[in-house]
Length: 126
Image: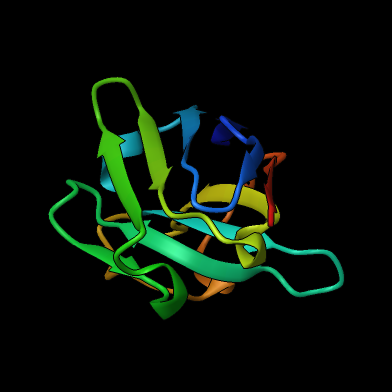
């Protein structure tokens, strides 16, 4: 069972930056795609970004393209989300998760990910 610990959230003004990190343990990290999702109050959890097992491919939801960058370090078993030009609508709890299947194609579906961490709160003030 993989264990995940997200960190790096906080309160930032609009236009600012934050870098989220997710530390994973418990299985072969480098075999799995990793995803970041977020959940705002009263809304469903939604896809933000994903990265392939070796980091060669990435995918982003349209609202964060050009502002967020996902990356991973397979030696340290971490995945990061650099968030720039933050907007109030980015306010949410951010979660990382590994794909359920190794070496699979990138997915945006929550059902394709598992072992969710506790999340980290990001609040962007206007």
